Image (cartoon, rainbow, N blue to C red; front, side, top):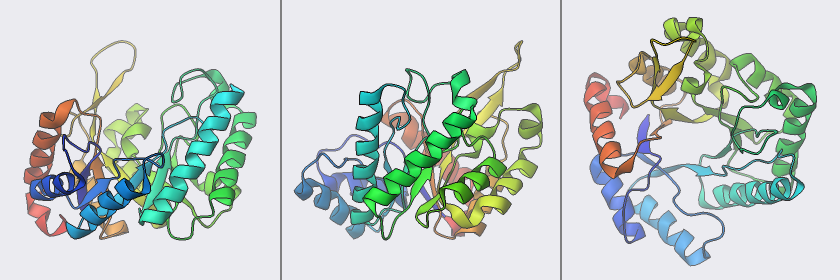
Length: 277
């Protein structure tokens, strides 16, 4: 297992970027530039990561390839294909995106997200992205979300079957699937289910936490590691069992200081499992 940060932290050169993350104890990174940057700069970051022994875990697409707006949708599909080509070229473990939404917000909750028509759009968009990008080494993956397909491990298995492409795989964010009391209080069991069913397909994971608010109605809040109620050690052990080199990426914090502190906390908390890090 290799820890990493979704933030590239403040840096001036690719070499400084890689060295800073290595010194903090990271074993993997998210690629900090996209396909639109010049090839020379892209290769500088690739070489810096390689020289520091950092695995490139993810290339993010982060756009809406099933948007109801034709211009937005076409631009998103183009970006996904280019980011997947980039991921393949630089040896990243995966290119990651969400499946998409049927509303104005690219990652937002809408009633229209949950229809068979939308399911078909998701399948066809993933097939198109993979078929046109033609990756040979990396994988296109979908990050789980609480309000868009797939919303559980069985739905993800169905999606894998219907997409039917060798280079379609899984990005695991079990935290985004904590949407019921059963999944929250029995999170050990739910994590086991996710990794048992999807483990062979998982290429990278996010790491954070979830808290149950004491409010009406039922509300969950994404939190930094250690501020919620999930068994992070269980999650790490399952990720390690699925792949000894599995990336675990800490995400969604404000500012470099918060990322550095969270990484130190996680390393200390996982100290009994140090051989995994």
